[in-house]
Image (cartoon, rainbow, N blue to C red; front, side):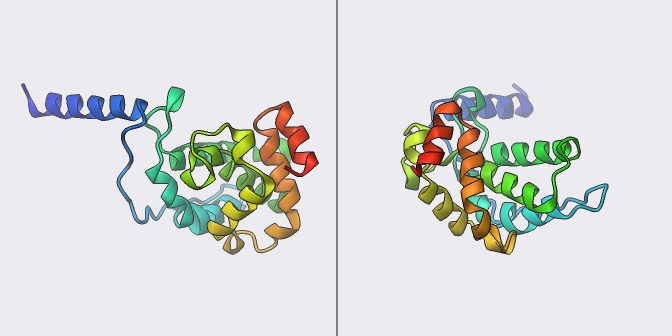
Length: 174
């Protein structure tokens, strides 16, 4: 059997293992991604520089299960934030609104992280305080120095991403 066929079989075994939650990505240290917006907005570029290429890299160690099996949590978050960049024009978001949205999406899957109770349902894992603690751990202040002024907005947006029940939870101060 050709070596490329062996490589494909090995990859398929790794993906099958990931679907069962038994495989994690190797540590990549730094990816040194770079992004330049067509319209000169620096928000996503700064997010990549100060969040994605730094603290968020630990999300590479966490793989998704279910329909996203084998995809790292880092990849999942990056797919979301780059999609929002594409939609930014439609919603006419200013820089602070964009930063809030990116941070809310960054912390939207806390229930996948061990320190917040991996395997719990989202509503039980993602209290406002947990969201804020995770953003502090990611050192988002280098990306958005005023994020604390918007922390309630970020938590509310985060809760909205998971359904109506969570919106009520966000308003009650869960």
